[in-house]
Length: 190
Image (cartoon, rainbow, N blue to C red):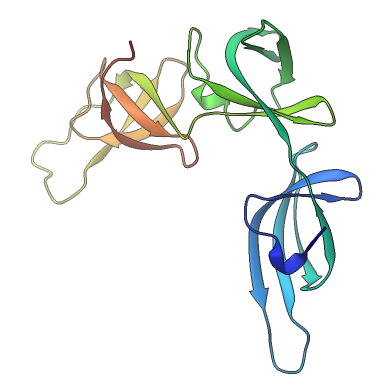
């Protein structure tokens, strides 16, 4: 058991039998009042978020979630199917993989992590950076050299993002999956 003061961002704690991801943890001590921890939490089973306050010495049970390397296989109806190295298939609903859907494309070979809680897969995490090909890009604005010039581009699955002005249709780009932002141009995956 950890105290609330020891819990850090990206830790998973067990509250009322459900795993909660700590998205924000802020220690506050003011005057004569006791120290508190303000936390923003996201339920890994339902996806709901909440902000709450704990006393700094409240006991919290930290959970270590199991992870398995998987790759995207296919989509059937509203279920996304991932497969591990031993050909075990894991089906997740669109709600479970909502944050990674913009980066899922047919034939992708990116190594993902399936996250398990009590033997049940609850989510899939992508690598922090992925490489995708631009399917459509707006035209460049001539003469605009005032700074970091960005334009809208579209990936093959319809996801839109802002890319550097010099990126064209067919270029491969690197995307940060945590923020959804363009990082740089990249070489085509082998």
